Image (cartoon, rainbow over all chains, first blue to last red; front, side, top):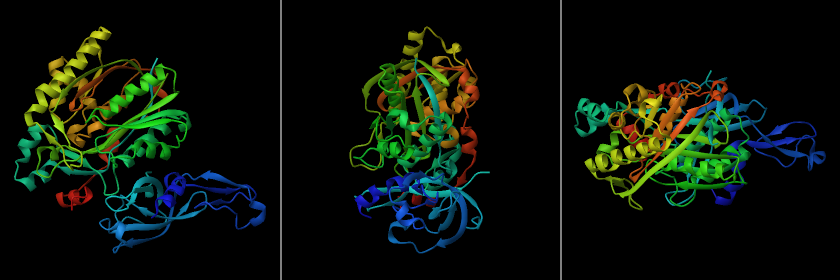
Length: 134
Length: 340
């Protein structure tokens, strides 16, 4: 990943800051500049919106053959999570045995190292998910 | 007046037992446990480092203190395992808790006492009226060469303190004792620290802690029995017990803050985590002495009085967090630490 792209995405990656359309109230994550429902009317009406980071597992898969930057972490869980505010997000679930993960499981966002650009490059941090404590 | 406004701690959930490390190197686990006063230590997950631990601790501190992170005017992160040699951990923390951009920030390094140096800096900025709140963090994912005695204790964890004018515990006074003592070091570019074996005890740990503690008590006109709790840096489970005895503190005064036997030495987090575990159970009016130690060498001592505000503060229960654990074997430990 290029450093400028990572830097641009820091608010979303660290703090799940998305956008809310002030016209219709829909929340978007990752952030969008235009509301696809309100279209032209939403120009200049999209405000930053911090998501709570809590949601529910909608579906998941276990990765056994990871892409190069994630080698060593396998097997790990990638899940499609429906955040409480509405948007769907794809994220890794950590500290959860692959036998325990299930559809409908409540999760919350945590802050982890996502990947390193080799030994000399930048370290990219961002959200992953853990099981929400009852 | 300067006070602790809030605190938050984080200890990774993985543990490795002394027996498991001893099995690898042909040591006798019973004599290691007895000698070092430790049973198991925390291990960071493969995607955890000092920055992620510092962020978790900082977020918990901000949440429980109930303050607006934008009002934090300074963040100092003390660690001897910052993920970058050049590029501050403090900026990562500041961004992740929403304290950016109007603040000053820096990383500190002083072996195991960089976090308490951060507290002192925040105290000075508060006293000078330069900031409303300051945050001092001690966090580490401590390194140890495989097979070195340090491997039994080098652990991971962190704690963040928010310092302000009024809060849950007043910091009455601080005192430091610092000399050039090469008891423990890590050269630039080296992956593991070196140490002076037994030299780390008498001229380093014991000398600096006793001097800082006595200097503080002299300043305050206090004696050990005036304190309800005492917390000393915990490189192992034995040193803090012995230094407490040397100074005239009882086992009862130190037992609540003594976490090393169950999580290991969290380096910059060590004494500060012990203080946090003590604040978890303290009552209004309780008086606490905390003395950190960093190799190289120096100690910072703090005289603290718990206020009435602690009663309505949402305390975290650090000991309960530590109970949530999962054991790993030596192979997984090596993998999580990036050794294999």
